Length: 192
Image: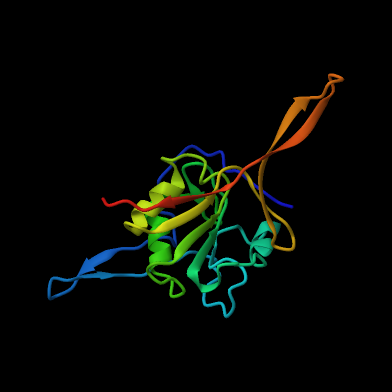
């Protein structure tokens, strides 16, 4: 299994390759250019694996995320990347804001309005005011975002578990490591 929790301070940086811009056309309408990242897995032919893979290619978790099964079929858009309560990172360990992740999702040809978004990113669902809720709000009113409340562990076969490891003392006074189970939490986009 492999998991990673980003402990970087919250930074909102527009990393190279992760930009979206609006420009005004001659008739006054805004035209959006597409967001890009250095390594998303897009245009895939099956619903196995993530839609956008922001894990570094040289980490084992990058390959494991490609094996994640999507039980909700074509109704769920999955994005994976290292993260914490307030951010997700791209493959260069640069923090990406919820606004930038929303732009990546909206500009992906596999995404359709109304799809549920599932975050494979540690602790992004831990707080009601955290990354998952911010992403739901950026995606628009009514959009559902599912995220883990604790560390997300992705096995080599693509299976998922949510838990933090904690040290406790048993009745003999010995320190033992136990799993503190987490859960998938659902957040709904609110009107701005």
